[in-house]
Image 1 (tube, rainbow, N blue to C red):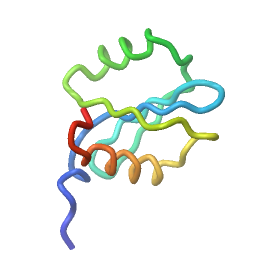
Image 2 (image 1 turned 90 degrees about the vertical axis):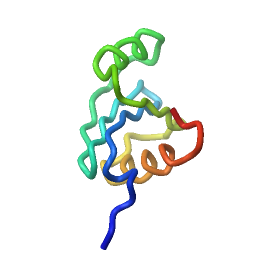
Image 3 (image 1 turned 120 degrees about the horizontal axis):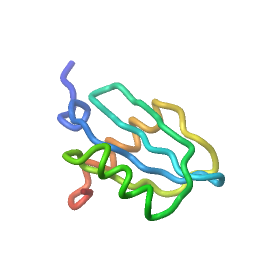
Image 4 (image 1 turned 30 degrees about the vertical axis):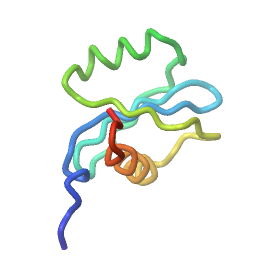
Length: 85
C-alpha cells in the first residue's frame, strides 16, 4: 500500500468551533490538537511564531471539535488543493 504524499507532510490546521478556535499540527498520520483559543488576529501571529516554516490551512467552521481522524482527512484534502497555503 502506498501513501499519498500529503499524508507524509507536516502542516498546521486551524478551525473554529462555536466556543473558539483549535490549532492542529499534522505530521504524517499523527495529529496534535491544541486549544481552545479565542478566535482573533493574535492567534494567527501565535501560530506563525510556533510553526514559522509550516503551511497553515484554515478549515471552515465546525459545530463541534473534530476527532483526530477527521482533522487528518479534512486537513489532507485541503492541503492538496492548489493555492491552499
